[in-house]
Length: 173
Image (cartoon, rainbow, N blue to C red; front, side):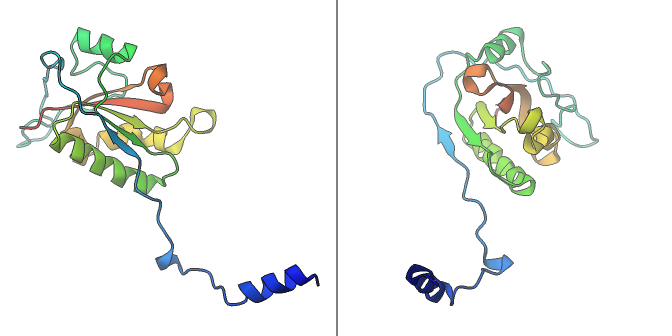
């Protein structure tokens, strides 16, 4: 045995793997917030249609890249990437469960801060079949998020294309 190997073996002899309970979870996602003044009146028009009895302002199912809830000018601005992104969330590297929890928390914070346009980066995954990207539509339709979201569209290429989504939030009342 080489002297270096012997030293390494002695050094690592007391090392034990962490138990599952002590292993680190992924760090918090990168969140960027841009502060800018609004230059014009709000561009989004709200027209929720209640789906559940007794639920005030629960909208119909959200379709990613659908146009429901947006006027023509807002839709054109989203498609062309000419919107003011107020916050960004990058979900690369997260497990499905953790990504969902982080997304809910992020959208709740953005809603509380009265942010309107956010960017959620999911990545595309192999052959455009990433698990987070595949689940984002159902997550945005979950009861925790649907009441806060007007629309979602895949981003313009300059903001990540099909690996990212613009999410338009409702006004906080």
